[in-house]
Length: 322
Image (cartoon, rainbow, N blue to C red):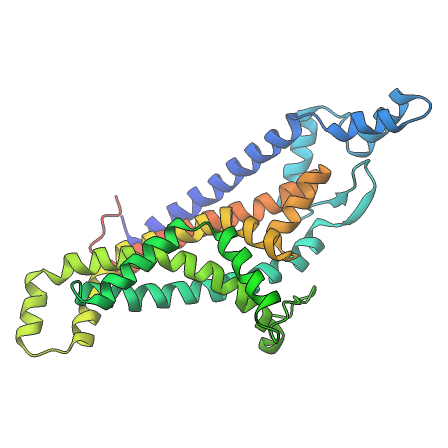
């Protein structure tokens, strides 16, 4: 099987997986009773049944589940993701507009966090692998274990405490509308980016240290050292050979960050991003927005896995594509 055929098959599997995730998400949300129906009936002063039926009709809950699913699949395929729905069925803004406003907020801190974590992991992990018995290496190892043990919400709360009580010049006023082309307006997002980045780096540097330490004992590294190569050149050879497993592990951390830390960080910092939008939608039982945010996260996770397959094909020409 050629590399191109392999990638085409992986792409087809990714599309299939996306529709499976979409179906599971829809069924999960659709079969759970909407508590707002009963709440509307309780608030009604007159006919409670009429109030409950009005909410069901406004949210299309009175239609058969299969018909609702087929209509929804057609709408998703045509990029018609519907409109936001209030607690009692009030129409709101289009889902795509809400996602368009929230995604830049999430990317404003998530992308720098990934850069920070990757740089810290490669630099610190490589140094610890080269100097495993030095005091600095041991201290960095202890710090990494501490970073793994501290929950991200606790670190975020400590940062907020320091920002508001200890550092007068630091004002965490996050713009509600983010322009990713204006770096100056994005500087407040470096604070949550640092929290996410350092938390990620604590785990990633262990991967770098483990892979680098294993390869440093290989015969070709001894030959490179015997030729008088510097530490930087040795690391270049080591990291190039460790690229494949490191890419796989880093991508796995990226998915876990989007699923877990995204909600935690945006809740603590009150960031109007994708996670905050999903939490609000779940609280209001806003089904179109719940499905919209779920699909974005699922698409990102599936896309990351596809990029991992591409990385396998790129970094290892000897890979078996059968």
